[in-house]
Amino acid sequence: MTAATPTPDELRIAERYLSVLDDVSRCVQALRDGDWKDLSGTADDLCRRAALLAEAAKKLAQAEPQPRADVVMNLIASRTGDSQAARLLHPVGSTVIPKTTMTDPFTHPNAR
Image 1 (cartoon, helix red, strand yellow):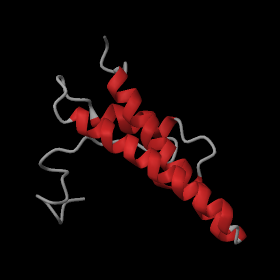
Image 2 (cartoon, rainbow, N blue to C red; image 1 turned 90 degrees about the vertical axis):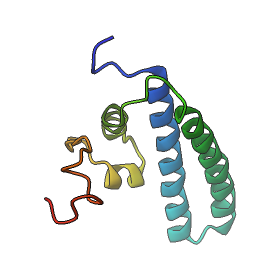
Image 3 (cartoon, rainbow, N blue to C red; image 1 turned 180 degrees about the horizontal axis):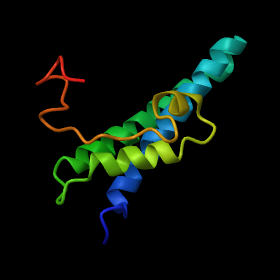
Image 4 (cartoon, rainbow, N blue to C red; image 1 turned 45 degrees about the horizontal axis):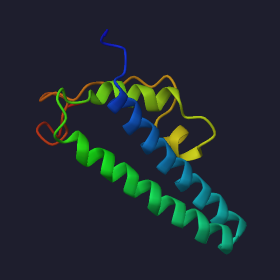
C-alpha cells in the first residue's frame, strides 16, 4: 500500500463525517425555508449519522495502525459534493498540513 492509498478505516471515517456535514447542510436549508417538518426529519437523520460517526471513531481509537488524519482530511476535501457545510469547512484544493508540535495551536498558540 502506498502512502496515498486510503485504508478502509480512513474511507469509513471520511464517509461518515461527510454524511454528518451533509445533514448539517440540509438542516440549514430547512431553517432557511422555514420547513419545520423537514428540519425535524433531517435532525433525526443527523443524530443517527452522528452516532455512526462516533461509533467508527471509537473503534479507531484502538486501531493499529492508526488512521492517518491527513489522508482522511484529503479524502474529505476531495469529496465535498453538494454539501454546503463540507465545502465551507473543507474547500477543494485546501492544503492539509499534518499537525506537529510546531503546528499545533495548543502547544504553540502564536505560531502561524
